[in-house]
Length: 436
Ligand SMILES: CC(=O)N[C@H]1[C@@H](OP(=O)(O)OP(=O)(O)OC[C@H]2O[C@@H](n3ccc(=O)[nH]c3=O)[C@H](O)[C@@H]2O)O[C@H](CO)[C@@H](O)[C@@H]1O
Ligand SMILES: C=C(OP(=O)(O)O)C(=O)O
Image (cartoon, rainbow, N blue to C red; front, side):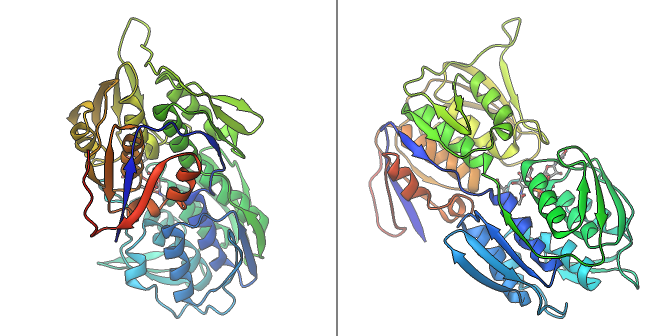
């Protein structure tokens, strides 16, 4: 195990290119199981969750060949449906469950161990299972979930999600793509990564209409072909770099973004006082901004609430909390999706932040606070990044343990932050370091 040692208080400045979207790459890699032909995926982020997904695929018999640092060729031609998912790999990531749709559609049966992922509250699988049932599957639910398609395979049909679950929609898309006929997915999620997967499936031969909306129509095929697909930029990582620039005060340029995916993030961060500009597809965060939260009409306290796309992303609420600690004024942050995501704010309080946790879903942050270096540990990917942001703007030295969590979703974050001027080192966990 390793930890980060951070000397805070330095402005970060320079240019950074976002990695490919973690939550896009995972379903896109899983989609290779749908075809016996080669699938080439480019702009793959080199993060732990991707390694876990590739281990799972290799365990099933998929051949995995790296073409360069970020491009991988996958071939699932040798699969016959006989191999089981390795339990320890499946339990490592939430996205392991994304293999259910492709396996069920191609082989008519799969046995899924419980998936892993961030422990940030209750995480339902019901929308996934409802979708498979709507396509004709029968399920035997124990600790593992054993799913079978009817004789002759899944049947195209009408799927209506009980909530716009991101991975639930992706699993429905993956299964429907290899199910001949027209499947309509209603109340679908439409995050950028869901859109990216739909575009890839279209390239493989299953046309998906309605991409970007909450009704997707999939024209599934009995066979799908290979493709060459490039994963889109990670808007959550871009939001994280924006907040980092804002709290440390340097000018940062984030190149090769998808500006349309950043509208809500720029709007909400703008209301937290963080001004950003677009220069083509580059996001520019000017340096030395005096952050100040705006008020709603009538002098009411500003509120940030996440929601399904195109609302503010749940995965950026922890980052928004860290940003708000440095803004003059106060803001209510309401993370209504996940029960435990705001629990980490006690660590920011220990650093000197003024945060009142009203209940597990709502926190009031008043700022600006002078943060001090602390001994910290990362409970999940985004809280880990929020703590890193806080440590980089704090006075003195901090350490952050359990950084496997950060490495799950952010590629070579220490190297990339050092290139922006951060004083940050990765050292073995058992080396004792004074903080403060
Ligand atoms: C690998 C991956 O892609 N993970 C992402 C995916 O997880 P995942 O696909 O698991 O998340 P879901 O969209 O299924 O649901 C998230 C949670 O919010 C609840 N919920 C969700 C939507 C809704 O309208 N009502 C509701 O109550 C669900 O019950 C669940 O507890 O989407 C989440 C929500 O954007 C992100 O935080 C995760 O990073
Ligand atoms: C919650 C997240 O990931 P996962 O769904 O993979 O646990 C995240 O990316 O913030």
